[in-house]
Image 1 (tube, one colour):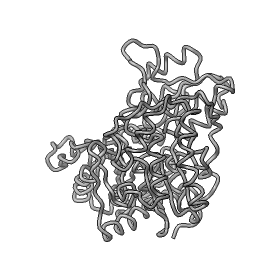
Image 2 (cartoon, rainbow, N blue to C red):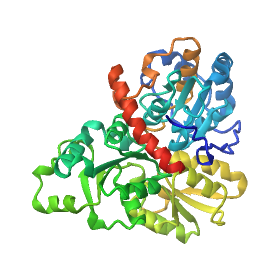
Image 3 (cartoon, rainbow, N blue to C red):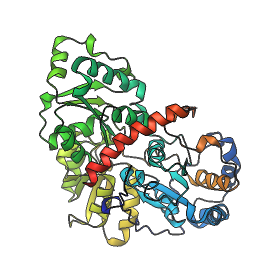
Length: 448
């Protein structure tokens, strides 16, 4: 049984955002066929609005959201991640919701049992983690089930299972400890928990690895390659003690027993084995970008999903919550920051800092000819726009929400086709029981 982990580290602070009438919704409009059939009437109204300024968008949203808020009262909990566009982040706050990083969001349902209807405008793996930790009378919904993560897409359970099977066979199940990143499905978390492993996030990865190293086992980190190399550098794990299992579909087709003697020796001597998928956004950042902004007098802070060489060139490295605090509160005292993380987060922080006299840029926007700049933000993570939020809340109030939007443990949604797989009751119970082991290990280690 989990205890109440509503400690300081899981407390979500207000983002200090100010909604201004002329602030535009940064997201491009989606074609109608990108919406679920039940959502299309709401999307049609949204697309017919004369502009995307919040002075226009908010009154349209209010006519649907305020009745839903009145209907559910204190039983409703709205959630969003820092990575969502600034408009969605602040709109969630405006209507009484909470914003946080993946660790903070994971605990929100469990620490608030009075909230029976949880609606998340973020990524599917985050909503599924909330669902796994939720009480039986709580229901978790996502505004767009196709909102995903490139890293999670290339670390599906069928891709990772061969790694766990082969490593267990060669070294013994009691000598392999899986540690999985929060950016994985419930199925991966359950695979890890079933073997005594733990989940980690970017905010607690060092502490989880310190625990794992004491177990005298080989650590299988699922994923990612970059964060694994970064934490290995922090904890002085030699590079020659790291082995690599291919990510994505290559991982599904890789066999340890088909490798040459040199590769097998690398695995035999490895302390850390990395499942090598990665974040497509964070790998864009390069050391020469850090050098460019240093020359302009900027303090550079990056996310640990960046490549090791970029992390080492930066001034500091940390989770989304760390980055937010570091920049918004001018911890370096420079008033000038270049941030290496998803661009919606950077845009959000930039807006907050405008009135503080703090200049914020995206690390990837360094004026170096061979780099094109960052664009708006992660295309898969940001598939939650005002019509998706409005439709979800209104259909919930009317008792007409599609089952497609409820997130159950073990669900898999194809980020391209939208096809959804749901496990039967026994399958869901296996996911809950084993994923909770990994999540509880994370919470216990982090909060100790």
